Amino acid sequence: MNSRDACSWDTNQIRFLLERRQEGDSAAEIAAAMGVSRNAVAGKLHRLGTKGMPRKKVPSNAVKVRVQARVFPTNIVRQKPAKPLPKPKPEPLRQLKTLFELAPGECRWPMGHLFCGAEAQGSYCQFHRQRSLQGYEERKRHQRSQASRESGPPSGDAAA
Image (cartoon, rainbow, N blue to C red; front, side, top):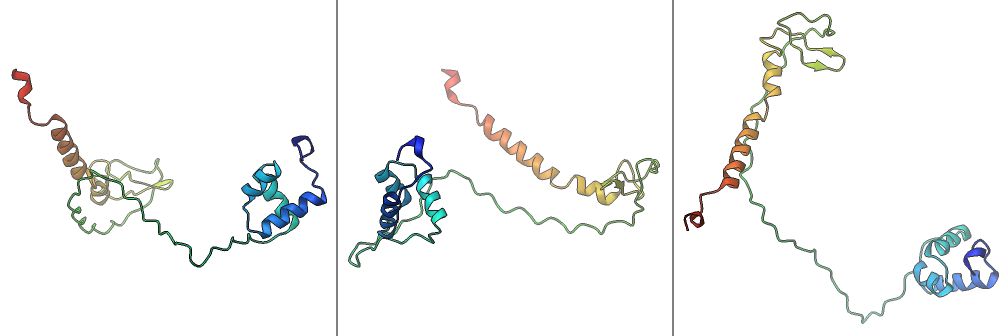
């Protein structure tokens, strides 16, 4: 079978295909023997309505090999687990408002197409201000520690 005549399978080819499949050969092995693509073999098997792929019989005295998971060396420094966040205060009673309904001194925390509208000092009420700054201190601490690691202690090579 050549590439120009890829759509036609004669009865000898189909018989050969089914015999090799019953022997447990893979689609790639059958395709290599027939000189066609693996997808052509898989497609024909599917169109023929064959179910599943028989496995080649492995002799009972064959050595079974167990594959171990690959271990990759890592240089990750384990850090102490983060402190649990304090329980947030309950959300304030709010009156959801549109942007045009908000007055100065009302929380502008977005909640879908509306805004919180609770009493605020600045742009947000106390609850939403804490929520907006959540993790800020930890990020700053991490940035400072990274900066100090990158700069490192001064080396003695510069004096030479």
